[in-house]
Length: 268
Ligand code: NAD
Image (cartoon, protein in one colour):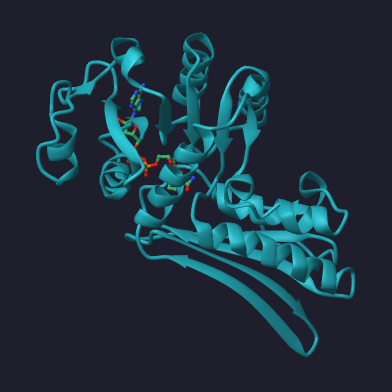
Protein backbone atom coordinates (compact mmCIF):
# COMPACT_ATOMS: atom_id res chain seq x y z
CA UNK A 1 0.00 0.00 0.00
CA UNK A 2 1.42 3.37 -1.01
CA UNK A 3 1.05 5.87 1.85
CA UNK A 4 -0.12 9.13 0.29
CA UNK A 5 -0.43 12.67 1.62
CA UNK A 6 -2.51 15.19 -0.31
CA UNK A 7 -1.31 18.79 -0.29
CA UNK A 8 -4.10 21.32 -0.85
CA UNK A 9 -6.58 18.74 0.43
CA UNK A 10 -9.36 21.35 0.79
CA UNK A 11 -9.13 22.42 -2.86
CA UNK A 12 -11.20 21.24 -5.83
CA UNK A 13 -8.61 18.63 -6.82
CA UNK A 14 -7.63 17.89 -3.22
CA UNK A 15 -11.14 16.75 -2.28
CA UNK A 16 -11.44 14.68 -5.45
CA UNK A 17 -8.07 13.08 -4.66
CA UNK A 18 -9.35 11.94 -1.25
CA UNK A 19 -12.12 10.10 -3.12
CA UNK A 20 -9.70 8.61 -5.63
CA UNK A 21 -7.28 7.30 -2.98
CA UNK A 22 -10.20 5.81 -1.05
CA UNK A 23 -11.30 3.90 -4.16
CA UNK A 24 -7.79 2.58 -4.90
CA UNK A 25 -6.86 -0.80 -3.44
CA UNK A 26 -3.12 -0.11 -3.71
CA UNK A 27 -3.03 3.23 -1.86
CA UNK A 28 -3.92 4.58 1.55
CA UNK A 29 -4.44 8.10 2.88
CA UNK A 30 -1.73 9.02 5.36
CA UNK A 31 -2.18 12.79 5.51
CA UNK A 32 -3.86 15.92 4.20
CA UNK A 33 -2.29 19.37 4.24
CA UNK A 34 -4.18 22.68 4.19
CA UNK A 35 -2.91 26.26 3.99
CA UNK A 36 -0.97 27.41 7.08
CA UNK A 37 -3.35 28.95 9.61
CA UNK A 38 -6.45 27.53 7.87
CA UNK A 39 -9.54 27.06 10.03
CA UNK A 40 -9.70 23.53 8.59
CA UNK A 41 -6.66 22.34 10.59
CA UNK A 42 -7.90 19.39 12.67
CA UNK A 43 -10.84 18.62 10.38
CA UNK A 44 -11.27 15.01 9.24
CA UNK A 45 -10.20 14.98 5.57
CA UNK A 46 -12.83 12.37 4.71
CA UNK A 47 -15.56 14.66 6.02
CA UNK A 48 -13.95 17.56 4.15
CA UNK A 49 -14.22 15.57 0.92
CA UNK A 50 -17.73 14.30 1.62
CA UNK A 51 -16.80 10.61 1.95
CA UNK A 52 -17.39 10.32 5.72
CA UNK A 53 -14.95 10.14 8.63
CA UNK A 54 -11.56 8.58 7.77
CA UNK A 55 -9.69 9.25 10.99
CA UNK A 56 -7.05 11.37 9.21
CA UNK A 57 -6.99 15.00 10.26
CA UNK A 58 -5.85 17.98 8.20
CA UNK A 59 -2.54 19.54 9.24
CA UNK A 60 -0.83 22.70 8.01
CA UNK A 61 2.76 21.44 8.16
CA UNK A 62 4.33 18.51 6.36
CA UNK A 63 6.98 18.22 9.06
CA UNK A 64 4.28 17.01 11.47
CA UNK A 65 3.51 13.90 9.37
CA UNK A 66 6.88 13.31 7.68
CA UNK A 67 7.33 9.86 9.25
CA UNK A 68 3.89 8.62 8.12
CA UNK A 69 4.05 9.35 4.39
CA UNK A 70 5.74 7.99 1.27
CA UNK A 71 4.40 10.05 -1.62
CA UNK A 72 2.94 13.59 -1.76
CA UNK A 73 0.31 14.46 -4.31
CA UNK A 74 0.42 18.21 -4.89
CA UNK A 75 -2.20 20.20 -6.82
CA UNK A 76 -1.65 23.70 -5.41
CA UNK A 77 0.32 26.72 -6.65
CA UNK A 78 3.85 26.98 -8.12
CA UNK A 79 5.49 28.45 -4.99
CA UNK A 80 3.88 25.88 -2.68
CA UNK A 81 4.95 23.06 -5.01
CA UNK A 82 8.57 24.27 -5.07
CA UNK A 83 8.62 24.40 -1.26
CA UNK A 84 7.23 20.84 -1.18
CA UNK A 85 9.97 19.63 -3.54
CA UNK A 86 12.54 20.99 -1.10
CA UNK A 87 10.75 19.09 1.70
CA UNK A 88 10.88 15.87 -0.38
CA UNK A 89 14.60 16.33 -1.09
CA UNK A 90 15.32 16.85 2.59
CA UNK A 91 13.17 13.97 3.88
CA UNK A 92 13.66 11.39 1.10
CA UNK A 93 10.01 11.50 -0.07
CA UNK A 94 8.48 11.16 -3.55
CA UNK A 95 6.03 13.55 -5.19
CA UNK A 96 3.37 13.69 -7.91
CA UNK A 97 2.88 17.27 -9.13
CA UNK A 98 -0.26 18.40 -10.93
CA UNK A 99 0.16 22.13 -10.31
CA UNK A 100 0.13 24.22 -13.50
CA UNK A 101 0.96 27.83 -14.36
CA UNK A 102 4.69 27.67 -13.52
CA UNK A 103 6.71 30.39 -15.29
CA UNK A 104 10.07 29.66 -16.94
CA UNK A 105 12.03 30.45 -13.79
CA UNK A 106 9.79 28.23 -11.64
CA UNK A 107 10.02 25.42 -14.21
CA UNK A 108 13.82 25.63 -14.08
CA UNK A 109 13.68 25.51 -10.27
CA UNK A 110 11.42 22.46 -10.40
CA UNK A 111 13.67 20.76 -12.92
CA UNK A 112 16.71 21.25 -10.70
CA UNK A 113 15.14 18.73 -8.28
CA UNK A 114 15.34 15.95 -10.90
CA UNK A 115 18.67 14.86 -9.35
CA UNK A 116 17.32 14.83 -5.80
CA UNK A 117 13.70 13.64 -5.79
CA UNK A 118 11.67 10.92 -7.56
CA UNK A 119 8.88 13.01 -9.15
CA UNK A 120 6.08 12.77 -11.69
CA UNK A 121 5.16 16.15 -13.15
CA UNK A 122 2.34 16.46 -15.68
CA UNK A 123 0.08 19.33 -16.67
CA UNK A 124 -2.64 16.76 -17.16
CA UNK A 125 -2.87 13.43 -15.36
CA UNK A 126 -5.77 11.97 -17.34
CA UNK A 127 -5.07 8.79 -19.28
CA UNK A 128 -7.20 10.11 -22.17
CA UNK A 129 -5.22 13.35 -22.48
CA UNK A 130 -1.92 11.49 -22.45
CA UNK A 131 -3.16 9.20 -25.20
CA UNK A 132 -4.32 12.34 -27.06
CA UNK A 133 -0.75 13.69 -26.88
CA UNK A 134 0.39 10.54 -28.72
CA UNK A 135 -2.33 10.99 -31.36
CA UNK A 136 -1.25 14.63 -31.84
CA UNK A 137 2.34 13.58 -32.38
CA UNK A 138 1.21 11.10 -35.06
CA UNK A 139 -1.07 13.67 -36.74
CA UNK A 140 1.55 16.43 -36.74
CA UNK A 141 4.22 14.12 -38.21
CA UNK A 142 1.85 12.84 -40.92
CA UNK A 143 0.56 16.28 -41.91
CA UNK A 144 4.00 17.91 -41.63
CA UNK A 145 4.44 21.22 -43.36
CA UNK A 146 1.76 20.46 -45.97
CA UNK A 147 -0.21 23.66 -45.45
CA UNK A 148 -2.25 22.74 -42.38
CA UNK A 149 -2.89 25.64 -39.97
CA UNK A 150 -2.68 24.53 -36.35
CA UNK A 151 -4.84 26.05 -33.61
CA UNK A 152 -5.30 24.94 -29.99
CA UNK A 153 -8.61 25.82 -28.34
CA UNK A 154 -9.26 25.19 -24.66
CA UNK A 155 -12.13 25.80 -22.24
CA UNK A 156 -12.18 25.69 -18.41
CA UNK A 157 -14.32 26.78 -15.46
CA UNK A 158 -14.46 30.42 -14.31
CA UNK A 159 -12.14 29.87 -11.31
CA UNK A 160 -9.05 28.78 -13.27
CA UNK A 161 -6.22 31.26 -12.68
CA UNK A 162 -3.71 30.47 -15.45
CA UNK A 163 -4.12 30.70 -19.24
CA UNK A 164 -3.70 29.04 -21.62
CA UNK A 165 -4.03 25.82 -19.64
CA UNK A 166 -0.93 23.75 -18.96
CA UNK A 167 -2.50 21.02 -21.09
CA UNK A 168 -3.03 23.36 -24.05
CA UNK A 169 0.62 24.43 -23.82
CA UNK A 170 1.74 20.80 -23.61
CA UNK A 171 -0.35 19.97 -26.71
CA UNK A 172 1.23 22.93 -28.53
CA UNK A 173 4.71 21.78 -27.49
CA UNK A 174 4.12 18.21 -28.69
CA UNK A 175 2.88 19.44 -32.07
CA UNK A 176 5.71 22.00 -32.38
CA UNK A 177 8.37 19.42 -31.51
CA UNK A 178 6.94 16.92 -33.99
CA UNK A 179 7.23 19.59 -36.71
CA UNK A 180 10.69 20.80 -35.69
CA UNK A 181 9.26 24.17 -34.60
CA UNK A 182 9.66 26.03 -31.33
CA UNK A 183 6.55 27.06 -29.42
CA UNK A 184 8.43 30.07 -28.03
CA UNK A 185 8.97 31.30 -31.60
CA UNK A 186 5.74 30.17 -33.28
CA UNK A 187 3.13 30.24 -30.48
CA UNK A 188 0.57 33.05 -30.89
CA UNK A 189 -1.37 33.76 -27.71
CA UNK A 190 -3.25 36.92 -28.61
CA UNK A 191 -4.89 38.31 -31.74
CA UNK A 192 -6.57 41.67 -31.56
CA UNK A 193 -7.08 44.59 -33.96
CA UNK A 194 -5.22 44.72 -37.29
CA UNK A 195 -3.03 41.71 -36.65
CA UNK A 196 -2.58 40.81 -40.32
CA UNK A 197 -2.85 37.42 -42.04
CA UNK A 198 -1.78 34.23 -40.36
CA UNK A 199 1.85 33.09 -40.57
CA UNK A 200 1.67 29.49 -41.93
CA UNK A 201 4.00 28.24 -39.20
CA UNK A 202 2.22 29.81 -36.27
CA UNK A 203 0.47 27.72 -33.63
CA UNK A 204 -2.46 29.74 -32.32
CA UNK A 205 -4.11 29.47 -28.91
CA UNK A 206 -7.63 30.45 -27.89
CA UNK A 207 -8.94 30.35 -24.32
CA UNK A 208 -12.50 30.13 -22.99
CA UNK A 209 -13.30 30.61 -19.28
CA UNK A 210 -16.90 29.93 -18.32
CA UNK A 211 -19.15 28.30 -15.74
CA UNK A 212 -18.13 24.89 -14.45
CA UNK A 213 -16.36 23.41 -17.51
CA UNK A 214 -13.92 20.80 -16.13
CA UNK A 215 -11.53 20.93 -19.11
CA UNK A 216 -11.87 20.71 -22.90
CA UNK A 217 -9.08 20.81 -25.47
CA UNK A 218 -9.19 20.71 -29.26
CA UNK A 219 -6.25 20.83 -31.64
CA UNK A 220 -7.33 21.80 -35.13
CA UNK A 221 -5.34 21.05 -38.28
CA UNK A 222 -7.09 23.05 -41.03
CA UNK A 223 -6.25 23.43 -44.70
CA UNK A 224 -8.17 24.30 -47.86
CA UNK A 225 -10.81 21.62 -48.29
CA UNK A 226 -10.63 19.85 -44.93
CA UNK A 227 -10.14 20.16 -41.22
CA UNK A 228 -9.06 17.56 -38.67
CA UNK A 229 -9.94 18.15 -35.02
CA UNK A 230 -8.60 16.06 -32.16
CA UNK A 231 -10.62 16.74 -29.02
CA UNK A 232 -10.50 15.63 -25.41
CA UNK A 233 -13.30 16.50 -22.98
CA UNK A 234 -13.02 15.84 -19.25
CA UNK A 235 -16.42 15.59 -17.57
CA UNK A 236 -15.17 15.01 -14.01
CA UNK A 237 -12.02 15.85 -12.01
CA UNK A 238 -11.96 12.19 -11.08
CA UNK A 239 -10.07 11.43 -14.30
CA UNK A 240 -7.14 13.65 -13.16
CA UNK A 241 -7.31 12.31 -9.61
CA UNK A 242 -7.27 8.65 -10.68
CA UNK A 243 -4.29 9.35 -12.93
CA UNK A 244 -2.48 11.08 -10.06
CA UNK A 245 -3.04 8.14 -7.70
CA UNK A 246 -1.81 5.75 -10.39
CA UNK A 247 1.29 7.96 -10.76
CA UNK A 248 1.81 7.92 -6.97
CA UNK A 249 1.73 4.11 -6.86
CA UNK A 250 4.12 3.99 -9.83
CA UNK A 251 6.63 6.54 -8.50
CA UNK A 252 6.76 4.71 -5.16
CA UNK A 253 8.89 2.09 -6.98
CA UNK A 254 11.11 4.50 -8.94
CA UNK A 255 14.52 5.93 -8.20
CA UNK A 256 15.40 9.62 -8.30
CA UNK A 257 14.40 11.37 -11.54
CA UNK A 258 11.76 13.48 -13.23
CA UNK A 259 9.03 11.44 -14.94
CA UNK A 260 5.94 12.23 -17.03
CA UNK A 261 2.54 10.58 -17.30
CA UNK A 262 3.78 9.11 -20.58
CA UNK A 263 6.38 7.25 -18.47
CA UNK A 264 3.75 6.18 -15.92
CA UNK A 265 1.48 4.83 -18.66
CA UNK A 266 4.28 3.26 -20.69
CA UNK A 267 3.41 5.40 -23.74
CA UNK A 268 6.98 6.55 -24.42
P1 NAD B 1 -7.99 25.10 -5.79
O1 NAD B 1 -7.72 26.56 -5.64
O2 NAD B 1 -9.38 24.59 -5.64
O3 NAD B 1 -7.06 24.26 -4.75
C1 NAD B 1 -5.77 24.62 -4.37
C2 NAD B 1 -5.69 24.40 -2.85
O4 NAD B 1 -4.34 24.57 -2.41
C3 NAD B 1 -6.55 25.39 -2.04
O5 NAD B 1 -7.45 24.67 -1.20
C4 NAD B 1 -5.53 26.16 -1.20
O6 NAD B 1 -6.03 26.48 0.07
C5 NAD B 1 -4.41 25.12 -1.11
N1 NAD B 1 -3.13 25.68 -0.69
C6 NAD B 1 -2.57 26.89 -1.01
N2 NAD B 1 -1.40 27.04 -0.37
C7 NAD B 1 -1.20 25.92 0.36
C8 NAD B 1 -0.16 25.48 1.24
N3 NAD B 1 0.92 26.26 1.51
N4 NAD B 1 -0.27 24.26 1.80
C9 NAD B 1 -1.34 23.47 1.58
N5 NAD B 1 -2.37 23.85 0.76
C10 NAD B 1 -2.29 25.05 0.16
O7 NAD B 1 -7.39 24.69 -7.22
P2 NAD B 1 -7.64 23.36 -8.07
O8 NAD B 1 -8.72 23.60 -9.08
O9 NAD B 1 -7.73 22.19 -7.16
O10 NAD B 1 -6.27 23.30 -8.91
C11 NAD B 1 -5.01 23.28 -8.27
C12 NAD B 1 -3.91 23.18 -9.32
O11 NAD B 1 -4.00 21.94 -10.02
C13 NAD B 1 -3.98 24.29 -10.41
O12 NAD B 1 -2.66 24.64 -10.77
C14 NAD B 1 -4.67 23.56 -11.56
O13 NAD B 1 -4.40 24.12 -12.82
C15 NAD B 1 -4.04 22.19 -11.42
N6 NAD B 1 -4.76 21.08 -12.08
C16 NAD B 1 -3.99 20.15 -12.68
C17 NAD B 1 -4.58 19.03 -13.25
C18 NAD B 1 -3.69 17.95 -13.82
O14 NAD B 1 -4.20 16.92 -14.29
N7 NAD B 1 -2.36 18.12 -13.78
C19 NAD B 1 -5.97 18.89 -13.23
C20 NAD B 1 -6.75 19.87 -12.60
C21 NAD B 1 -6.13 20.97 -12.00
